[in-house]
Length: 308
Image: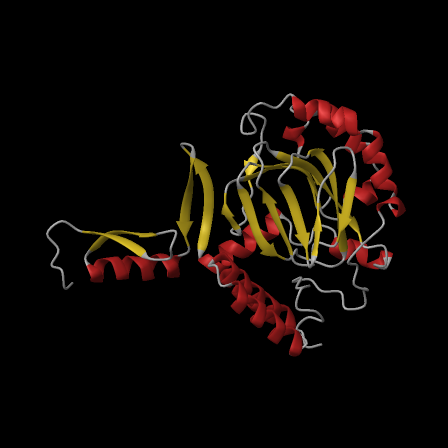
């Protein structure tokens, strides 16, 4: 397959996600089917950016075949006890997920590991859960992300595909209220407290919490059992937070990002800054703001003519 297919997959994925986020689900499906016809992916419902073509499609996987599943379920009560003490997710270190496909509600997470990299600040808030995770062999902690996922009532996560088919995703049910469910392609799944679901999150999936209580699961990524061990190292850390930030900075012309006074300070690269400065000056604008619907909100310089 040509090397530029990686770029092509990203372009198709962004287009499909944009259509879904805008409510154009039928058009997104047509786009996905066309991409599969062009052999960008094998299946229109499985659209990872990192695509290992040799791996078989896993639409249903027996959780009992994974050692980690039994281990997490045996330690469920300890994990649940710590989660039950959380009255405010934000105060317990949960942060909003940077997922544009959350079209209503709120989805929070607290991350223990990502790409094998440990987030030390989580240990003081969840010491027992951290200790349980740290007893798992390092090789099995490096496939992707290990986190607690808190889905608030009234939340809907639109259909989307994960980064790679080289992993399987485990969900350990912790808080599993009525009204919370997940679609993986054409199958609908419900969580049960103390039990694990295993699925390939490169397959299109969609999540709802239509109940009145939060849905909380532990997410634990493992390597696809058919992925050759020699490819584990290449996948470890792929598309982690640092890589996503680096890619976003390059694409958006950001030179430096920093936290300041509770907000985010952004310094643009010189070319981007000059282009924006010129546009503002030539247009007689003091500021521009991108609204949620994609429109621009502008504020004119005092006294500037309307036709400038």
